[in-house]
Image (cartoon, rainbow over all chains, first blue to last red):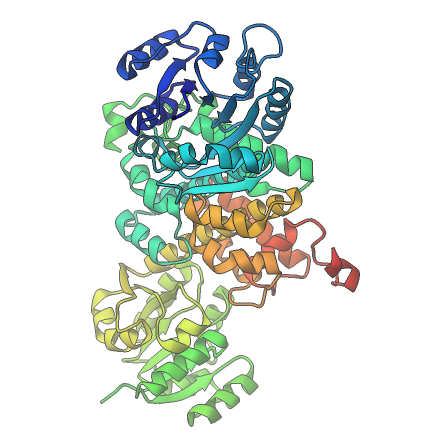
Length: 307
Length: 307
């Protein structure tokens, strides 16, 4: 019999993972969100419950998948006192998918163990459509035997397991994820500079991008973000605010290990600057708003557009 | 009849381009280098002359390919007074392949025109083995009609023209090249941080690189330099000193166009730091010497290697 699944945090990622599992025959029994309206809506769509407390979520499921915003939200849903997923959690498995610090994953695993439950981190290196289609790249940290137990479910989310990687003990997958995003953010902010300077010089940007793609300047973000930077199409797949958060986590690891990371720092500052300027909700490609002449966070008037 | 070709600057790139053209039936008639020994040796190999003056080089050739170190060397070989390639240059075509500033290409084109000659920049985005095999990625700037005239020769160097791109007027190809290398250097320095932090955390670097390759962290330099960073194999294809020079040219363009380039600046500083530390002759992958714990420019003792 399939285990009963609950979701905590049903933003764009969580909701689409829930849809995917439901579609593949897993009984999604409960959904929960800090915004009760979002949970109610998805519950209606999936025909499941949307309890008012975290303890009820745990009561309704064998496996609880969490996709929350940050460390503070993790602290809250796995609280030691008050309403918590840990209440009556004996035998449950928590799969935590948010990009949060490695340290909080280690802490949650400890708390879960104390409650007789198991906990894994399943860090995602993909975006919304991959969540919907079950083609997420998943990096998993935690105990190997727990991983093996829930692997069938994780396979449904990761292209039949082709994109599923067991990394190591609790915290290690989150470390890898933070480094992935740090490097991605560096490449993104760097690309925005190359294109911004090219534009200011009056170079043909299609040619410039074609040359980048054929040379040592090539990168995954060139393919995913280059054209969007040129077109100012910053509809959000992965927000600048998230980029700042993830680069910040990676810089925390750099400080802890006393490794100098000047590129990581420079990229962090660019994305943090976007947040400060009030454009942190743009896609990470929006970092080009800082490097193209005449762009920026000011309201786009007709005059600005004409430049 | 094939035009007679001469080469000025026969370091690893220039010498291999000369070998390639010679092998493909182009009469290489003269070679010249600031280090006369290097020219004499190659002349012997190719069975051509190695004149003592630049004026003689021009006299012996229809097309002169130059691959020199920097702007100052360009100034010298195209000097207005004294020994110069411009002496008796009427009807000659100069093809300048070094990565130098866009401004010097514009200046050389002017001087060549005054001498009744033509000049192109043919910027290379590849390395030594591609020079030897005739598979260089070539970005060409200058007059279109001059480009068309020497295109047959350029095709022999660029995989039958598959890798040949006409960019625009004098200086534009050098601009593109500088931006390519700026972005490449950013990605390289950023990758070194990701791997260095990962190593300090005790993560398995093969896994980390595999994850990078499957995610938004993927890049050309991950494929070309990742393993070398891990192995400390910094035998030189493209030196840190060259990386610093090229990033410096790009930052000059950024200043000129008043575009902020914090990532470009951070990468420039890393490669410049390598030069300051006396390890500027390492390959650009050597930037990992700055980001892996226990590495650095100190002489590698057995103890250091054991770490």
